[in-house]
Length: 149
Image 1 (tube, rainbow, N blue to C red):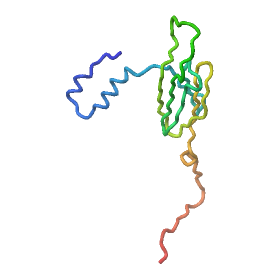
Image 2 (image 1 turned 120 degrees about the vertical axis):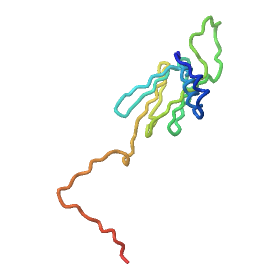
Image 3 (image 1 turned 90 degrees about the vertical axis):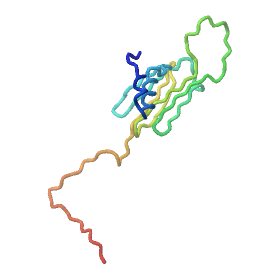
Image 4 (image 1 turned 90 degrees about the horizontal axis):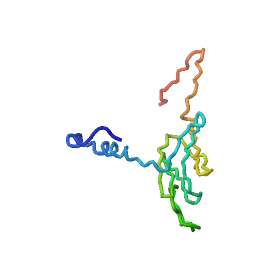
């Protein structure tokens, strides 16, 4: 629920259309399916998505660049044995997109008790990790940069 009106700003600004569109869309962000993001270790994370009613064949997970996309869609209409009087379990198609930080990779995914668990890990390359530089007690060496002619 938004308690402020942005419409006067639309009339007096130029070039901020994308910003205002993002602010308008923020309140109407889809809430289906619900999910959790948790930290399971120093460099380990887990995304848990509630996907009741979906099987492994109905779900797809794609990691591309710094984006993780989880899609769900029922493949076939299952034969129902009786008439449904009330349908509270949503089975509509969905797409959830998560922005991943640099060097975060998807380790595994499993479907268990109606919850999809996607395990992630941050794997920083050795070249990017901080390293300790020992301080020597001796003289500093000077490297001659003259070019021999």
